[in-house]
Image (tube, rainbow, N blue to C red):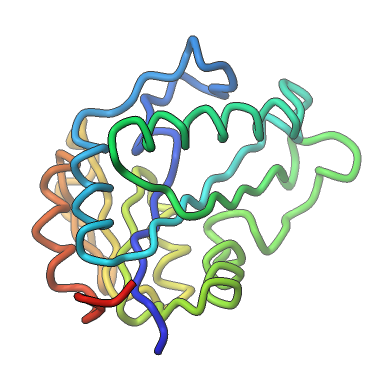
Amino acid sequence: MSKSALFLDRDGVINLDFGYVHKASDFVFCDGIFDLVRTANQNHLTVIVVTNQSGIGRGYFSEETFHELTEWMRGQFANMNTRIDHVYFSPYHPTEAIGAYRKDDFSRKPNPGMLLQAMAEHDIDLSRSLLVGDKITDVQAGIAAGVELNLLLDKQGLYESIQMPNAHRITRLIDAIPFLTGIGNDKGKS
């Protein structure tokens, strides 16, 4: 039976977005992220990060640096008795990247490539899944992939109303927690 998932953007959802964060010393976790992931774990949701990382394509940092930071980040979740199951990233940008990274790749949000790859590799039922992102492009990717519910984390009140199907606006990560219990029906399975 296919599993339900919680998809998370990274910069702006897991950590504060200072622009091209690539060092642990600059990585500040967002309020409520550990509680959100812990609740997802308790509700037997697969937790998957889907993140555009054009800083790689722009030459600001390497894929190796990204992977090192990702392992450190996953370790911090483990230290808080929570779990990130997988991290997908898109290093591309259609106009600002260099070399082979300069392209409008299907993996780059608002395209649904990372979500569809996760669906295939982790047996995810997107129609019983939830995405939390802080940009319209995150929500657009979720909608394009067929994610059941897409939450736009709008801490600054930039989007008073969101006129997109299967999308809602929240202002704090903890506001996403009640949505987790309504997604999927995997309770009791592991």
